[in-house]
Length: 463
Image (cartoon, rainbow, N blue to C red; front, side):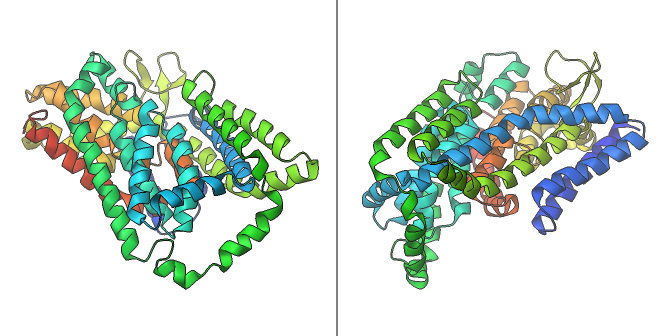
């Protein structure tokens, strides 16, 4: 079976998944398993892989999403315990006094917290800092969770350009330069992006206000306060107001351990869950009640991540010269190319020669749609070297190509189902992937194009 055919089948698999999810035909976890397994059967029948290799690929995929699944389960349990204990009720009260009935203030505050939270470059940690703290505020003010996610992911996309962030480091390693040097090149674009994401936050607030959001807005008046009172009565026996300071201190310690980054990211939450439930709820029956009450969302999202492991394994992993399943990286010779590598080769084959002189612009324009099909490693380690080689044949320097791929793709990092942190974010916000894409895709694409225009006007990316 030719690599061209494998690339075509890869794109058909992605299209099948996206269409199925958008039409709400099945759960994401099912789509992430069924379509890649159909592809696997075709590849085995065509002699590209054998059955044993498929098993190794799936195992490799679990290696990339397994830690995120563990992180999600224990983070959901932890923040669930803190919510039941009433910690967020106090925080929400303080935030409400600060912003009052100002919906725009809430969205701008969300963007600022996300910008600060993403300084460490970790997608999962940023979602875990921003969403649990702001989601109750959005619900109380009758604002959409999809708006919360969109504001957060655009802010994260801008800060993801820092020199210690994954995409910048990957692109710099392929270019053979220091990531700090690459960051200095794209700093003007990042500065513009920060202003743009704050402007978007204002726009998002205006949109929410127009539809009747707010403490005393049209939506609040229509719904009334009955649901709020029922919720208070339901959780009344779980609240632990006397332990508020302890719970705050524990939460700060958990987040500090997360940022310290000396342990796998799920370890701080495992420790946090153990301490929180033992201190807040000493009775074993109450402990079971708390865990059972949050088991449903945790299991649903965990199954989605396990399904994503199958998708990642079959599409992203190939086999190196030692016959081991691996992701293509600089200096790693691939004996059998991954499906995603074949997809990247296919793109280079169909690019018309007439647009070769403007390759950075083409890449920048297509980066957001391509982000839905490529994970971060495959995009930078698989596509970037190929695009650099094509650009060289047309006399286009490598740096503008890398800038286009880093800046424009970064905007879409956290709407891509190929990025495990995206699945964590939508799980925490209780939003389906299709709704996240519907609400965010065009905004993210427009954001990306505006950043590209800025790169052109500043001379960073020549026409």
